Length: 87
Ligand code: FES
Image (cartoon, rainbow, N blue to C red; front, side, top):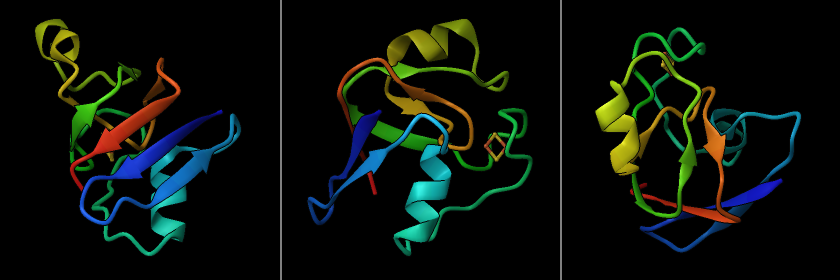
């Protein structure tokens, strides 16, 4: 498990192994656009302000993934204990 933090209001949410970041954010009432939920379309793309995403999408190029400044919360996870999102 890891934690996501919203930059705007500082709220933190635990993301357990069996749930997606998108799932956890939607449940918290965050208005996250979703479409394919498989890392293909890029609809859910979210800016990452801190932490290191574990990219599992096929949307970003390898270079874009390596920058670690955005990720796809429908399928990607985190290598660091916490991700701070621009939400
Ligand atoms: Fe399509 Fe996340 S919803 S990449």
